[in-house]
Image: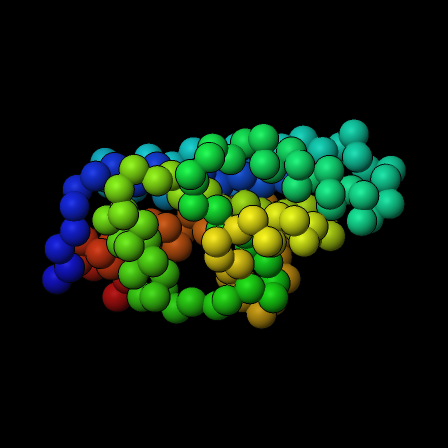
Length: 163
């Protein structure tokens, strides 16, 4: 069993684009409901439709700029990226535990748009994380990520969900 401080870990999942599928919203709501009081998780959607007609590189820069507006100074930024580091659920739980034990830093997961993140977002992130070698829509990435956050808290608290 792991021992860690019972501070509330504030997590933001920021994504480019909106979730439109009801089954994704329902799944997210279910995992939000299950999270323990030691985790406060919120979703932030960045609408970047106004950049839709820009060239890919410029669009990615604008999306990164919009992300930076939503990330508080001192927050621990994790950029989801297909080329990022892959962690097992147990390793991810350890990462969550470390962040929870570190104090009052907020933890921000950033899910990019169709073309991924601009290099400025990847450079600013303290961790570049891949959920899988497969490619997912940002909606599915959000659902998988919130499930893994719930799983991490379950592992850290010795709950049977992970088994």
